[in-house]
Image (tube, rainbow, N blue to C red; front, side, top):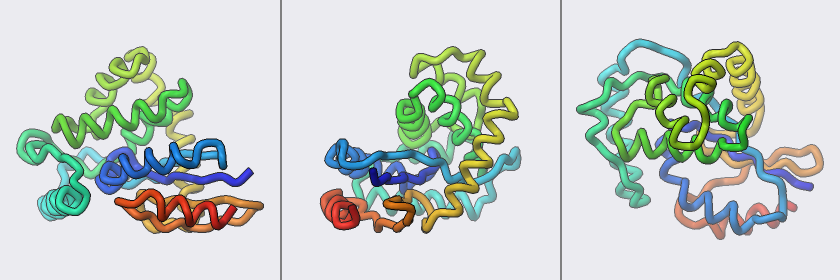
Length: 201
């Protein structure tokens, strides 16, 4: 069976912009192929405050996505939070949740916290509070997210993602009979992507 790989980062603003279209595409594909999620790891661990230039760039990106796609953002984040250029903690959080078949719930919880509620998913405290929202045990989650096992899984998955024919996040890659093909993403029209995928399988 062919497999569609969705490569993302929980703190990637274009992934948030693509969410609604992606869910429609995924539903339409149904059981026509297997779907696999992979985290790509946008920005490594850092305790340093995000540089002002990067903050301005991301604020402009949010505004652009909002204008182009109609995706909601809470811009108060840039006034009330302490941004860090660090997405690996959020990536680890979804890997922990994946072990309990709750990767999609954790991804959505992180996106809502970040983009709608002006919370910082670079902070373990934020991620731990989201854990309880999706029905996982907080202390066990904190233990796992800081474990070498989860860190090793993350590093291996980032390497796998980087070996695929991707151009940033989000990316779609179709694996069929051992061959990998990049599928261009249309952020507003899931049907054009759907037709492209069907033409490959």
